[in-house]
Amino acid sequence: MSSSNRRADLAARAAAVAGSGAASEPTGTGAGSNGGSTGSPGGATGPAAGETSGELASRVPRTRPVRVTVELSPMEHKALRQWCAQSSADRDLPVVAGAEVFRALLSLMRNDPGMADQVRAELERTGGSRRRH
Picture 1 (cartoon, rainbow, N blue to C red):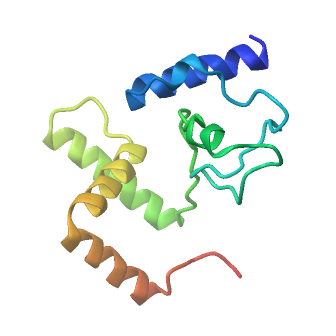
Picture 2: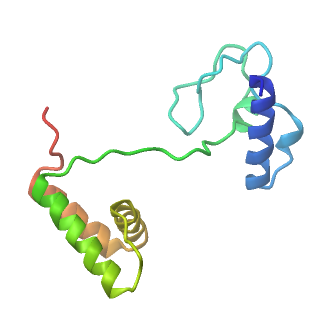
């Protein structure tokens, strides 16, 4: 699939998700298109030369999943595996994946202010990052 067809396809999908009519106008074509992200909520700084605010508004949102890697100590990994195995047995599920546990925790943090506060307190207790600076 050519890049212009891919852009049009992604624009159509984004318009369908957003419920707008922006799918009829291909995005990223013209003098201001550089193929990179500029001005979109996905992490950019400003419009490219020649880009109008209408082109920025019709930008296609990210649709592909983002991979996140988490390094656990051997004891943390063992605890996660044990928790998943026990939860799988308790709920009569064939398997409970560790990644699903992290997704569930993220959902709880986003939807439950009390849970979010508990996570913040734990982050404060542990220093907020285990990365070596």
